[in-house]
Image 1: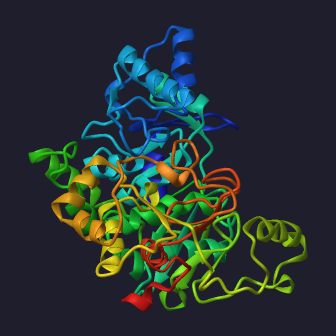
Image 2 (image 1 turned 180 degrees about the vertical axis):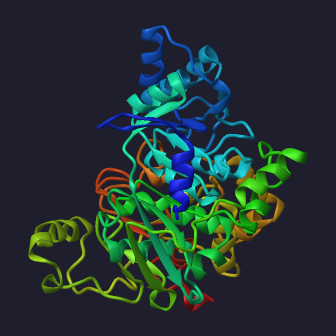
Image 3 (image 1 turned 90 degrees about the vertical axis):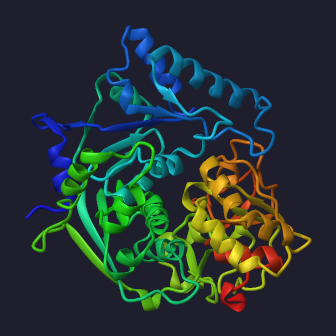
Length: 464
C-alpha cells in the first residue's frame, strides 16, 4: 500500500525521464522578492510568458521593515528587490499581495491562512521553509531560482523522488511543551542531517492533537533536519481550518474537495523507507546552545561535555561554543539575554501571540531586554487587535510591530548587534543569522516570553 506521500507525488507525475528525474506538475508556486528576480529575467530573455499565472502568487516579505511600512524601504538593495517584484508581477500577470496591504505578510503564513495552500497539492517556492505548507496535507518544498523559472514557464519541475519517512510522536505533551519544543527535540535526536533525502510524514497522538498552528510550526522546521519537506495527513481539524477562507473551495466544490481530501492518508499497511517513534513524556521546553538548530537541550539541562561529543564533531562543537560564549557542561538557565524575537514563519501566528501574551500578562518586560513582537501577516495583526492581545502586551511593556520576516534573518532593519544574545522563535541560529556576530538561542513563544520578563533564560513553567 502506498504512503500518502506516494499518493500525492504519483498523482502529479507528468512523465519519468529514463535514468533521470521525474517531471512533476506543480499546483501552486509562491514567489517573494529575494529568489524570483533572476527567474522572471530568464523568462524575459527567452521570450516566454508565465504559463499559468492564476496558479502563481507573490509577495515581498524578507526585506520589508516592521515599522513605517507606508514609507519606502531604506536599504537600496532591499528596495530594488521589492520594486523589481512589483514590476515583474505587473508585466507577467501574476497576483501580488503588496507591502502594506491587508493580504500581505510572510508568504508561508499567508498561504495557509487564506486557503491558497490546500490538501493534496504540490506547492513550491524559492525558499527552504516552504515545507511549512505541508501541515495542510500538501507536498511542499523549497526550490532554487532556476527551478522557479522552470515552474513559471511550464508549471512543472524536474525532481528526483525522495524516500519516505514517518516520525511518530506518541503520548501527551507536558504543560509548557509546544510544537516548537517537539521540533527542536526531533532535531536534537535525528541531528540536522538525519532526515536528508526523505520526505517526512508526522504522525502519532501528539500530531493528531496539535492545532493547525502547531502543525505549521512542526512542518516549517522539517528542513532543519535535512528533510526535503514534511507534512501531516489532513483531518477534520484541517478541514475546519480551511473552511470559509478566501481562496478555499465553496459550495458543491467544497463538498467534492472534502470527499477527496478524506482519501489522503497512508494505508495501515503502508511501508516507509524509514520509521522512528518518540515518546512525548521525554520532551521538555527546549533551547539551543550552538549554531545549528540540532544543538539543543532541555531548558533545565546542561550543554554536553566534550567526551559526550563524537571525536569527528568536536572541532565544530568547540567552534560553536566559542562563537556563542558558552562552555561545555554549562547550564543556560539564568544566563542573561538582550533581545527577544517573537515571529517568523515558524512562530508568527495568532496562537503564538496568545501563548506569549498568556505568560507575560500581569508581569512587565525586563528593562534590559529589547523585544520585537512581529505578526506573520496583517491578518494576524488584525486578530491580535480583535482579541485585545495588544492591550495585554502593551500593559506588559511590549509593542506590536508591523508584519514581515523581521529578525529571523538579517535582511531588514531588525538586526541583533554583535555579541548580544537573542532568544528567538525563528528557525535558524546560524552564525550571523540575526545580524553579524549575533548570538541566537532558539526557543518557543513561552520560553521567549519568560526570558522577556526576567531578562535571562527562564523555564516558562515557573509562570504557569
